Each structure stands twice: as C-alpha cells, then as structure tokens.
Length: 294
Image (tube, rainbow, N blue to C red; front, top):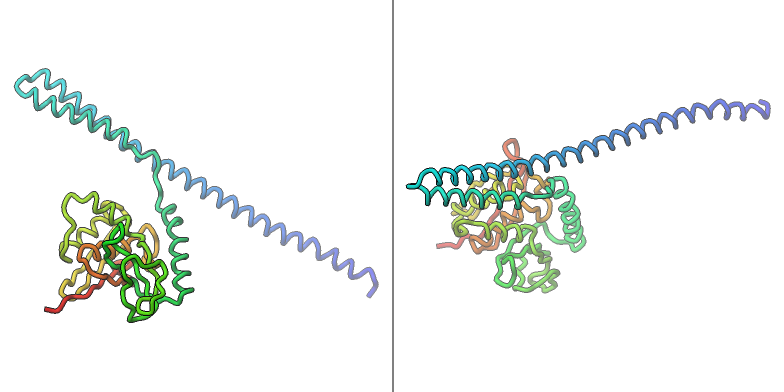
C-alpha cells in the first residue's frame, strides 16, 4: 500500500460524512421549524380564546344595555308599571356596567398552571424523599392558622400529630415529619368565601358541595363524583380530566382541596390516598378519618 492510499480513503470518506451531517442538520432544521410553527399556532389559539371570551362578556354587556333601554322606554309608555320598569331599566344598565368592566383582560391557560405547579410538586417530593418520610398524607384541622388546616407528612408509621404552630420540619421524637401549608388551603378559603350557604358538616352533604367547587367554581376537573361511606369514615372522589395533570403527586391542588374541605368540614384529621381510576375515572381520591365508636 502506498503512502498516498490512506489519504485517498480519507478523501473518499469525507463526502459521505458530510452528507450524513447535512442530512442530520436538515432534519434538525425541519424539527425546529415545526416546533416554531406549533408554538406560533398555540399562541394564536390562546389569543383567539381570550378574544372570544372577552367578546362573550361584551355581548352580554350590550344585551343588558338593550334590556335597560327597552325597560326605560316601556316605563315612559306605560304609566301604571312605570316604577317596576324603571327599576328593571336601572338593574339592566348597572349589570351592563359591571359586566363590561369585569371582563378579564388575561386568561391563564391550563398549560401555564401545570407548569407553575409541577416544580412545586417536584420540590415537595424531593424534600420528602431526602428526609426519608412516609407516603402518608395527613390533613390536620387547626385553629392557629389561616386557612385552618395543615398537611403533615410523618417520618414514622405511628407518629403523633404535631402540636399547633409546629413546623415546617418537626424533630420531636413522637411527631417527626414535615408540616406544610397545603396547596388546596387557599383554594378552600376562596371557595368558602363564595358559598351562598354554610359549609356542610356531614359527609353526605359535604362531599357534593366540595365536588361542585372543583368542577363548577374552579374548573380544575371535568368530573368529580363522590362515593360516600360515612359510617366507615371514607369518601372516595372519582376524578376525570384534571387540568393539572397526574393527581397522585404530593399535595396536588385537587386532592389537597378535597382533603382540606373534608378535614375542616368534619373537624377530623384526614388521611389521603390517591389511586388510578380504572376505566371510568382517571383517578380515585380517598379521604379517610377516624369514626368515633358509640
């Protein structure tokens, strides 16, 4: 073999390597272009959704204005019903003003909420793993905090509930673990402030009230169906289409809200279990509490 032959082989191989690199670069360029198009499409859809929502509020405001004007004109024409019609006109115009000025300027998408929650869940899980804590999740009603509930993640199976004001890391031998303000605590406080009735205090009445809060008020899931066993100290909520992803993560907003609500409504320490929901639901959230023996 002559001294020039390796150079010939190298020269012949180089175009092939260049062709391979060129194919890879073109493939990467196509993927990047596709990702940019998808991002642009996602941004456009978010803008269209926000615009459509704002347009809906404005159409409602215009309808209220129309109702108020019609009632005012009718009040001028019908003297006998003038007081009622003028009152209706004032109500319609007032509702129009409120609707117009309360139009949301921004809409926080489910994707944004998920991205905000995920690092928090990962951090909680990492801290719990680093401390060697159990998978037990205990929601404890308390009078020394707002909202009046705390999440206790114990170190030992037979840990006692830490006294009020403990945490966030409890080192007493009988109650070592992590005490946190639950994610669902502020959600529950907002829910309670908007209730048109008192918070229910029996499992049979409380469970549907909390389920309606998740679906109708906060729209955190499409379906929340409660199955109640008051005598056995258990409520299981079947959940489908959670906007914050997997519900089995530490202190997930839906599971946390339901557990906080049960703990506060029944004034009981509530243990939380989350499992896959099978064919009917995505997740099963079970809240358990100790039932007094009679």
